[in-house]
Image (cartoon, rainbow over all chains, first blue to last red):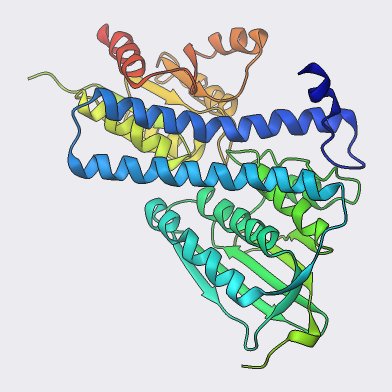
Length: 244
Length: 127
């Protein structure tokens, strides 16, 4: 077991110290929802609760577990694909956005948030990996839903230009702190550098950044007066771009 | 009729905060739930609680900043605090927290609803 552990490298170019730090951060971000699930389950077992409460708790346990699975899958994919050439394909970003929004609707509902989508005027087909793109979008939008005050509006907007497709995930919450923006966007930043200003460590965003990088794209956190702003830029697949 | 004990919960994870609230309300505590340090300070200005449950990682401040604020005013410095966190705190940090009126530091992964409610009941008994 010890040998296997020693062989784990997170990603190329990440120092041993950063890798160690990433491992701790990952453990922390997994621990929080796991603790929540356990706590809910214990309360359901021990307390006299109504049918309505039971339903609510069950929903939250299921959603938390689902999000945990998404995060661990993303982490494993980032590790696996970080070591090899990724088979990219044309992916319809419009459909990818719609699927993720559909999947996140129960989270938004349960968290008391609003989730909106602004589609591009034309279909956006990007050079990506279907599963990774899904994971990226899920992580970013989930982060916006989870770490903003109640009644925040999270908007996913898709824009296509000549060579690049841009997916903006914005919210009207408190936004990112300057230190986070610098840490996340700095050129010397290790790819799994976590954010610290969130209640969580922003590990989901770090995974999303790594996955976007693997697909040849870029993920940025942007300063905005209006709230949080994440931007995913991916290469457009012009040959398959279909006019509506 | 006895007035219910008032607990201030400072927890930005909505689902975590709400389950604390549900558990405590079921045991006849009165609960104010605040999602961040600033909201908690404002809540303190309105009404002082008998005890506080505090998360250490908050969106607008860290727990220490809140504790420092708490200690800065005579009327709030004696309010007992339970820190509930998933962060692995060092022994020296835990020790430092006792100087800020922290009565217990609980790991969210280990605490049970029963333990949390029991501890708060115990802490507020002598009020």
